[in-house]
Image (cartoon, rainbow, N blue to C red; front, side):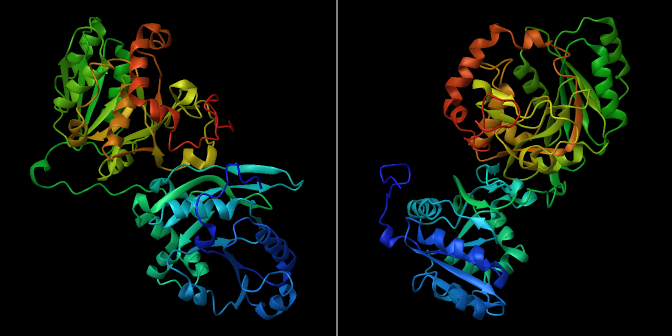
Length: 506
């Protein structure tokens, strides 16, 4: 190792935390255990030990006695688990449960020790992983986001290369790491931990000798909506705000889906008309006069999407505002409930749906800031049914932003940040800016694929107008406000490409 390189010691390794690697193995794994011990002995970080829990502990002890320096290797019978190490280890020690067949990169313990030294109060450190295929080539990199509790609840992604402080295990009453893993207590501990207790290390810390387990969904969290009491009782559950101008057929399709094919049905609709003159549009408005759930606000003047949305939100009587483009088509009666449930969570700001083109391909599955130098819909164009990288298109997860074509937020949170920025971002990037300002107040943004809608993208404004250079001042302002975030989206690994619209290595 070149000690002038990235992994040069920055702390006193002689006083660094001891890292305990724990494996559950049998006598049939002796060859792999010898390779693992050889790898550990070659590590530049000196403070480690290997605990092997096995029904063949005695036989393994005899087979491996010459492969490890004194004090490095500890064998326990399956009945004993690792109770001894949990009882005797320091509170600052770290534990990592390894699967049979894995490989440790030469730098892994040193990298973990350095981060642990720099973050002494952090309880959990998790890293990335990859695999070696049948030909011995590196394959299938699993490059994870910063701590994402919704994503972790759905996929257990953070347990794949996880290092846990000894004091955390003591608090959990650990008998063995294996028990914690089997009983999902590690997952539960992660789910209940504060964000500052968990750190993502952006390095591959574990390499498996075969394709690693896929990050399959284990849950699709759809929190129950809060009970409506007090002054909110009797009010609509949500206010649909739809900015619109002419294009009556698009708007009629959207309204038909809302009025005839949406559950729950106790919502109101506020159409914010930007000066329609089309006779068919005006006739449509007249036909809505008898529907107590629908109101039309007339706001003529230059097109300012942020202003129109703010006007609709100001008129909202519900605790939750659902911003919808007029070119949204309802295809699933249950689309609204997951959005409302997520928006009701106290630490959630904006929530977005999975939007499809009429062809069925993906239009929106969350926004990556920094993509293509600004922002972009990652994996746009994915075929219907594609799970996406790390199964992201199948489970709710944190993103930096969601599109304003369908954006749901509690009214009190929307009001707390002043709504959309109608002064600086009247047309472009106002939805992304809104999400980032909510995030700055501590309210994360959630994408949920349990809500699926069709989006006839740009049908109202037209794509050429949407990409017009006349909006470059807005893009410039956005870059000046969010330059640091554009350089590092916490939910999109820096080793992934910011050029490709489909997830790929950079």
